Amino acid sequence: MSYRPAFVAALQLLARVSEAMVARGLPRPILVGGAAVEYYSGSAISTGDFDLCSPVQAELEEEMQRLGFVKPSGPGMATRGWIHPDLRLGFEIVARLPMDGSVDPAHILLIEEIAPGQSFAIISVEDLIADRMGQYASGTARDRLDQARALFRLHPDVDRAYLDRRIREESQGDHGIEDLND
Image 1 (tube, helix red, strand yellow):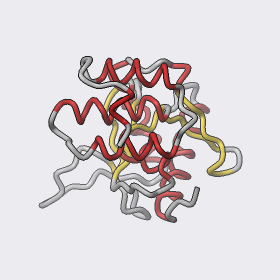
Image 2 (cartoon, helix red, strand yellow; image 1 turned 90 degrees about the horizontal axis):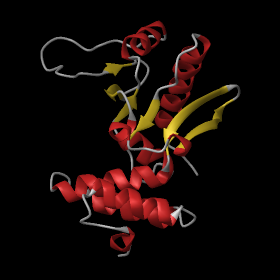
Image 3 (cartoon, rainbow, N blue to C red; image 1 turned 180 degrees about the horizontal axis):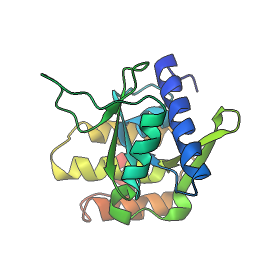
Image 4 (cartoon, one colour; image 1 turned 30 degrees about the vertical axis):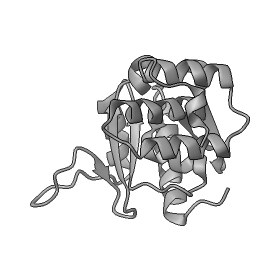
């Protein structure tokens, strides 16, 4: 897959933060949300922010600061996240656990292809599709159905049984894998 350069730079920075956490004996942050969609779509669907999950937010923020991240402040800067001066992408810690802990830990992937000796954790494409379907089902993000369908088309090798179960959980039974067909 061919990613846009700014996204690759942000992934490399995330990998550096991730390795710093591991060096401290702490868990890696887990990439979720729009940046995970961009990763799995090869930048076909792009994002403006990186959502992370971490049970140790204070320590993660310390490592982010060590690598140059700052919290924007001042007029017009209402953000809960962090910005790196070299990037135009925000980073935000959105939860302790992906999808309130409903993700099977065996489905958290370690991505090692971004930079030698550096890796980062990301939720599986199945959990990401289920998340998009849950948001769609809530009525708050109607465009998420298109994202879920695009990811499903791009990843025909998904674990269909797991995906169907997760979609049904995230949509309170309103949707299943059959809803991913156009």
